[in-house]
Length: 506
Image 1 (cartoon, rainbow, N blue to C red):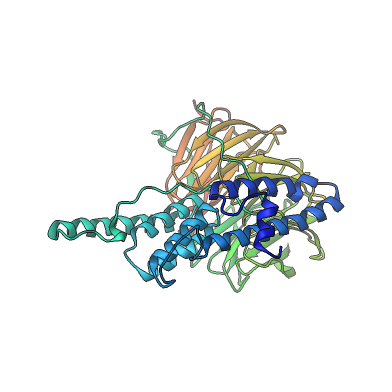
Image 2: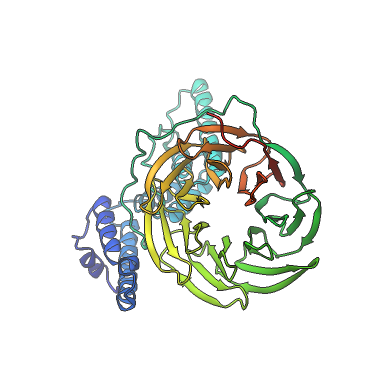
């Protein structure tokens, strides 16, 4: 795309069209030419990828024109060092759904004017919608402080308020996951009949903590356990630790990576494990006779690796990253078998189907992609009401659970993926797990609570509040008799829970 005139021509618009019209045209074009529309036709996919690049270039040219301070669109007769200039740029980028650029613009405005109320507030709404809860809370707190200062100042002085002291209407909340490579329709409303158990159970929990694994020096990002009695945990302290499930004893500490460990995974036979790092590397090990042997170390991704899973037979390793790709690897050789692209945001979670044939992947977009493990082929896309942070298939293969930053769990019936129910956690949800023994699904989130829900009704059965940080991972033990739940937390601990109750009450 060489000229702005060609860009407007490609979009089929007259120069000077409003933002709503531009976004609509862009989405239509991106949806029409997205490579996922041509699954199975390699020639068409290549053509679509070329077309998508042209569409994105045109979109960038139009954005640049809209942001030009001398354009008829903006009419900003101010210097670029003025905080208002960057605030207006942020508003336009937010309207165009370029949220990283909008955040950067609002941040620049705040640097120039530390009391720029509107910039803090608009940035907070974007943070909240994208799931950056702590950042959003910090900005909302700053808004309250500024308003309090203004109230105090106005009480002592009749001076006219400045531009940053004006009352601010809540900006239109951005829809996460929309990007030049993944057009999506407006978010669906949650059905009125959704389950809404918002209060914790008044009954005492039947799950008792039998071991606290507390040797990490920082938050624990992920954990996993095997029926053979091994627990592994990965931490922001850059280590992977191996524990005895029965006794809770620390078996080994591995200085695994030079940066934080974001995820760990155990093979189904308990003989191999892998870890994923913030710097884009993955490592895999084999276990045997008290020894840990490194199989391979790979510079796997161009950004942080956020999720990792073994195939059921242990022959493949699936990884997802902030570089917006999913990759499939041979676990014996470390060879890259498939590089799957087309995601519009960084990957958050992976889940394997019960039969081992498929895996689900989620990113910070309201879409779940179901793919074949053997070749990575996309077989289904499931639209969710919000960006998805966590996934889990039920052990019987009949249900898929999704959860996200809108605080809600959604349960879907497989294979047609109709929604069964929705329930509200009360905070962004970071982890999900199905029980092998009972009709239960566990969820954990930033509210530090593990909540247990009835899979048939969506009713909240129990709430466990014994962690002091966000719940980062959950797993039920795949054992015919033992009923054990594993949890990890940003409080730096892993906890092992046990119950004797065979069936959920009520």
